[in-house]
Structures are given as structure tokens and as C-alpha cells.
Amino acid sequence: MPLWDAAGPALSGLPLTLVVRRPDGVEYRRVQVADEGLGDRAFAIPLLSGAARRTWRVATYTDTKAAPMGETAFLVEDYVP
Image 1 (cartoon, rainbow, N blue to C red):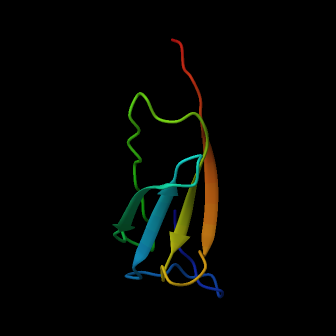
Image 2: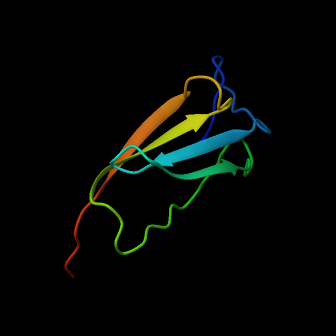
């Protein structure tokens, strides 16, 4: 997930916090992710086998007291190999 400014260049060294919420809205995990170079960051979200099914949400913050700068969602479903 690269972080860009309005002019287009990638921002480096800016603290970035990810907040993961379960489908019921309860905070599951909060982590500050480090810049991996050129403003890029990555974080794996480990889920237990009994994790709640449905839509989970991830919000991205530069300041956790302000509105999120971005949000995304992912779906957790049953998997039968």
C-alpha cells in the first residue's frame, strides 16, 4: 500500500496506523506499520480458524484522533478444500 502526496511523489517516513475491525465493529487489531521504502507498507492480518464470517474493515490513519485517510474491506467466508 504506497502512500502518495497530492503532487504524486511517494511519502516516506510518515507514521501509518492500521485499525482492523471485525464484522460486529469491534476493534480486532491496531498496528503501526513501518515504511518499507518509497512510501510502501505491508501488513498480514492473521485470522484464527474461528474468525467471524462476513465483512471485515481496515482503516488507515496518519493521526488516529482524526478521520481515516482511507478504508477498505475484505470478506471472510467458510472454505472447504
